[in-house]
Length: 267
View 1 (tube, rainbow, N blue to C red):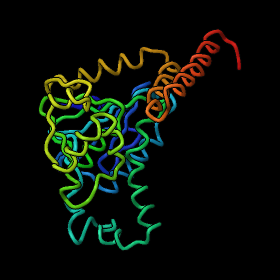
View 2 (view 1 turned 90 degrees about the horizontal axis):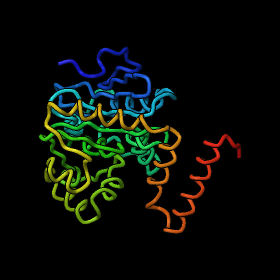
View 3 (view 1 turned 60 degrees about the vertical axis):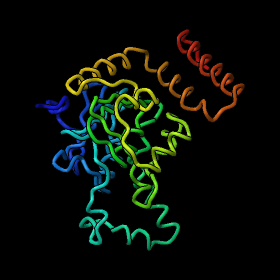
């Protein structure tokens, strides 16, 4: 079956990542279904590049994975002593000094951090397995629509490491500390029904309805005036870090900007 972005000329198509742009909507697709869209440093570099290549016209970014799984997590070859050819092994990384080790992980995280920029709204369309790094990539987006066969799991702690790809902050924000701790430490699967009930997902649909549900949501997201969406996203994304009075002040400032803009009055 053809995927929604295959009729468009890709802006980027390498290392298991394809970026296409259709006016205000961009689609980032993980394109290695034979390996269940397993992730590697090369894929992370391509994802970071996709973020840098987004045209200014883009308002919504859809993230999806080809095949039966969204992403089954890290490429298992990364766990072998030999690692992935051309990439440092985990042992190589561990031997770096504090600054080098921190910089390496920060570089990996770049693939996961641009999805929440205030000038775009990102939507993950998730089917099948979204494990470890796959789970964290789905969490990187603003919104998630899942198929009824979705299986989220955070397996890092079970492997003796921790989730370090920027997924812990959104996870706690979505489901709370206690449930986030339990999900991470047990490594258990979270299915579609629990995903919606806990706030991990906005909507769950049958697998053959996933693309249609994403199209409906993206159409609704681009229907509102862009500047109002940008201001609203900034208000909501920053709310947790502000006091009640600080948030009220931020609302007033944002509304003043909108009213002046609508009235054609420069600041």
